[in-house]
Image 1 (spheres, rainbow, N blue to C red):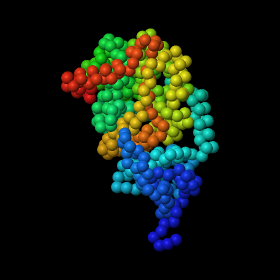
Image 2: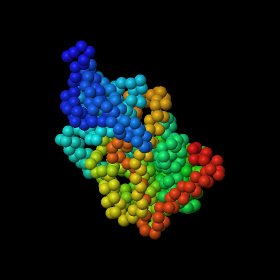
Image 3: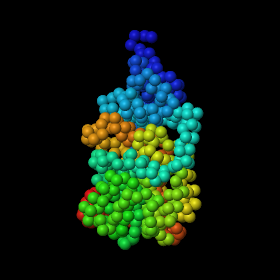
Length: 445
């Protein structure tokens, strides 16, 4: 070894896998003793990275392993072990701004032509275990409540650190990527409202109503009566307070209730970001209840994260630390349950890079307010959340994650024959807001 040269990093199992997989960008790994190994072609290959359109090339990133056997752990369970290592500081990223370079590192990892996966035998065991868990119990009422509490019963002040003023914790709607987060979330609400074909006086059920932002906007803008249900006590208290402050509590009712226990029928049903928490084994139950609760001439709109292939499964790190019980479905797993419910699919729209842009805004705001988050929950929690936000963004940019909106009805004649009405309703809402500044301000209250 010549002077100035480094010995190769100690990377059992992981090194050979990275040499096969890393063909874009450049990854340098420094092990706990100072050994160095490089992966990639040595140049920055063209690939979309950060923008809605083609962005910069995949970056050159240097990471450091501070534990001897961390490479083996990552080789056997890449997602879980990498996330846990970052959380506890066993994996660090070189650069002036580690959190900024975290996005670059995860863009490099997810932007490869082939994903970095655990060995086939490990993957098969994990898939069998996950399917057995769902088939045996799935998200029954007690488990669903526990899972929701894990994520959504963090203080609302924490979510205010990075969400928009309306507290929309779901994919925004970007027309070209230049919009502010507030504008994109307002456009998302208008897009959903247009697909619901709302009329004054109608009853609306909001399944998984969050902090009430969608219910407030629909009630205020379209003069409908909204019932919102959530399993989160923290969200319920916040939603009720917001409705009272807006003087809409006579038009909106919020309840801590499982969707399976909701009685009656509604003219419209909307569910945003809820299906991901239902679980594979409960899809048929979910859509059967939507069909039961939807009036004969009603319209339902289901907005959810999905996959554009059927090769995936629950991510173990996300399952353990962020969304226990969560399951991101392929459309091929959702559509059979809808068909068996008797509902008719009247429209499907796929949002491809919209959530990546949403997460980019959330990550930036979280970083700006990180000190406040650290004061609430500590350093490990902050590292967990920044890993979650950055990994989710890059998964939506480079891997087969999408958002779909499925419009449902009992009868073919319920919605207009063409999609022209959607844009017309959105334009009308925008013009109304422009003519009345009080409405625009209310949307951000």
